[in-house]
Length: 254
Image (cartoon, rainbow, N blue to C red; front, side, top):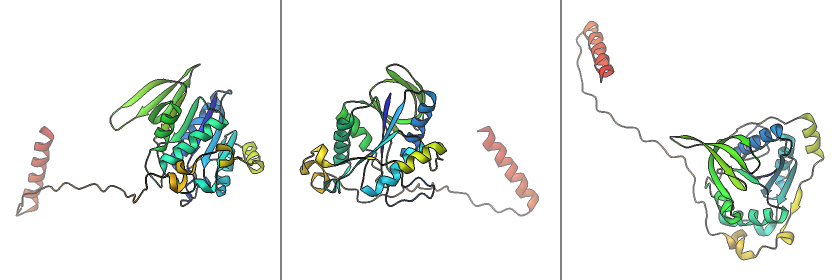
């Protein structure tokens, strides 16, 4: 079974964990794929990213973690692509190298926070798209058993191949797969795909093909609820203690 992990190269972030700018949400997808590989010998994992050539180190890290192959989609013309253009470039890259049974990715990147690429890629591929994935339980001949989780519920679902899985959890750190994998990674050079192979029009990628722009990303601040407290004058400690215990007892009965 072929799995392709679409990874985001986060050049502005160094997580100090030796993971060479791998987006933390994508690390969780890698961990899930490697877990499957340990359980099922038929699993073959390819790491894929659209990034500058400086992302080679990130792909070498993916190999050291247990991925079998890595593909770097890179070209000057791709620079400035938004999420819409990026999903199209990745779609063309997947069509070029061969479609897998599963595409895995983090639900969003830590820099853009749009959460759009995985969903858009599934739409372009006409694959089933599953979001909020937190675990993979089993693989069957034509399907996969997943756990998803939202704010209220945990769900166990069976999904037919092919599918795109968007993992919601982050993994801030992930150790090396094995010493053998680390040796392979040092000797490994990713397969390079440029626009010479993909033949994508200028109007569909880069700055010219971009339709959106992330202006600002900020954490939502929670508003504290203001509670009005009636003033109370207590003349001595014993009276105060009795009052507090009485109030606690009242609240416990409500």
